[in-house]
Length: 123
Image 1 (cartoon, rainbow, N blue to C red):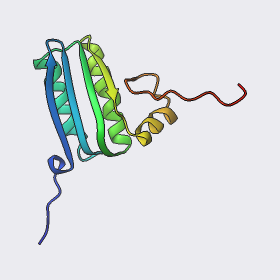
Image 2: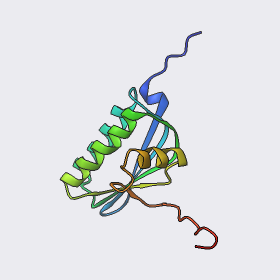
Image 3: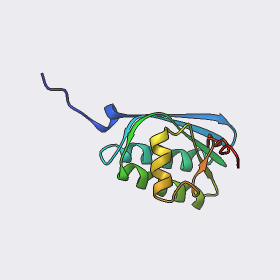
């Protein structure tokens, strides 16, 4: 038996309007070259139809992201800004936060759950 892997089976995107100007988009699975279009389509639809002031992109259940996924996040940030919407990433896995940091993109994105580092002893 061959199980076909489709973008929809590897990435699940749930859009929830949580207020008159707030949308939460929960992402689960793999955000990569094969699935990035699924997320981009859902976010762009929400930007056009709902026209929120703020969009929360909840990555708590994101299992994998590659450079195509990061590029998609970057492009979606620009698309949201173009319609005066703030795109906030929350619950990003540690590896995702690390990738954004290494690429110098962590300051671009509003990271809602940015973990505070404890000061070094003696500092």
